[in-house]
Image (cartoon, rainbow, N blue to C red; front, side):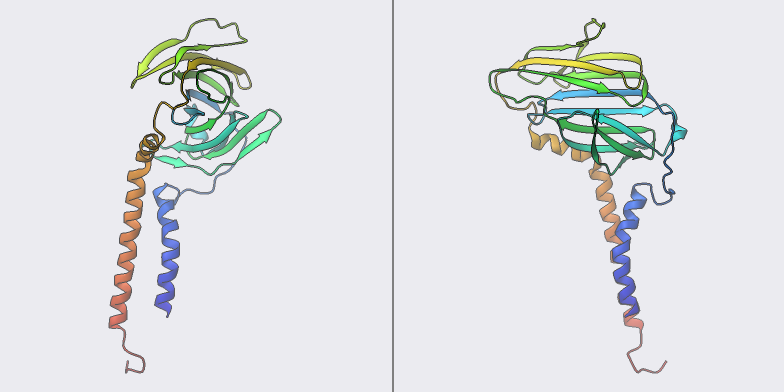
Length: 268
């Protein structure tokens, strides 16, 4: 009976321990939240309208300048019309994803998300709907950049949707009149801006406009989800395999001990 109870408890605890070890958190003490003067060393924001849905996909990635300040709690601003925050992760020096638990909150200045990052590298992506896609219509929206931290270098990349015409990207309400850099990557055209020494609280606006005859996204949603899952497929597969092997080993040990145990009432 004791062996069976031990086995059941092990099955309940084992997945939790294994997941913690796989995420690199098994030997990490509890995070200590404290005020830190954080500065972003480099940050890249990619804005992708109508990429795999009719919404706008935004990817924010970068690295805080002070690696020794982490683990730490950080805050990122979100658009008011955000519909879904897909990923909120920290990246280890080895490139492993440590995705965090998050809550989208609303404040006086809009929506935001608080994250506890174990490492200085971060990666978040979300979708929001600043316009309604209709056939034979001009799409227009303004993406606001509002950082909670100073950034030494900020890159903004805006992807042109497939089959879009008259694609324009501008900086309204500023004295920055220069044209964005244009380049192509994997069949997509991009407009790129580079900003240096961005101050926390400075709101920057990126205006995007284009004409489109259809409402179909650039990439099939099923294909896009398959690409995203490949990032975690190997780690999850190894984790499940490891749990299965350990569980099988425990079952074999239990059966072996049961066979060797004397029957009730037998002489010791």
